[in-house]
Image (cartoon, rainbow over all chains, first blue to last red; front, side, top):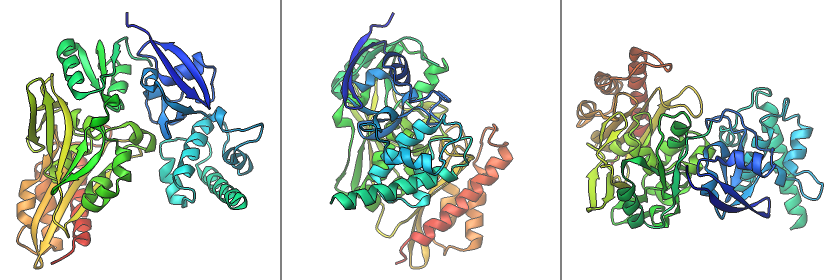
Length: 164
Length: 289
């Protein structure tokens, strides 16, 4: 029997501590131990991106990361996007542009798009499509997802100018 | 899908990692980015009793220039390669190649050293390394040795690495200025391995090819250097006929295994086409002198 490890990290700004077997995948820790069911289990083979979360400023697929690797990390899941009851510009844009149908891929799409806009605040359509290539959507055909990311980028840029 | 149980070790130095690898023996596996090993463990193709995570060793990550050489730590991620201004300036072929690997999330975890050590001919770095005439620093209990990429890949999942050794650094000679480059990859979808792919470096002097490096991904049990195709190009101007001849010679060494990506004839034909396109693109990018 493998030994268990104590792992601490920051989840959406709050410090958490869990005891895990080394083989435990991050997606299971988030969903089953920490009750963060926003990240979804899709393919479990690092293809679909439904489990995407942000770890230390990088988008990763939490089905292919061991929790034990994340000691000391700063993590953001879709639950951390909304602030004080106000949807993040991306969430609002996905709503307005109909960027989802069944919604299964949406938490992964949102967390990935969040990081994409941090890296590139004004992406072209092609850059958005390349940037979300690791997130599969079987409903929308991506058209409205791309529109939503573009719309959110514009709103975030406008908000930035307004506060500057 | 959850891997079977194992113990986890996170050494903070290469020396500690080598010591652990020696103590734990063949039941231990090295964990780099984990995007080949963890899927294999979930499917029970691998069930090591110990994982030695190389991710907490800062010395293994980073890109620098030493003299006329670029040195890349084995744990440098594909994403790091894509963002490196130094690489974009000195070895753009490697940046172009990294951009074709998997997807953004996988590139944030996947490492150049893991991609090479895994010995999978479907991975992209092995052929890129052959085309770039790279060398690998391999560290073990007997010290360090430097081996050429050419000759490192022995067969499917088999390399020159001994079980107690770790690939620690990749050394890439900076191509002469004006050298053209291209990595052309045919894949069915994002995240798939290449149906066929070709890496090319091309140097043109006085209207003729002075040097051509051509290497093929997923065209056999190892990455392949297309020596006859290279030799056929050197000393002549680039023309439609010379490119077709190079593509034909590249195809003549292909031994792809048939799978859902296509049968051997189709994959071989696509390898020829990728070779022709990579040569064309590299020629267009080369600065003629």
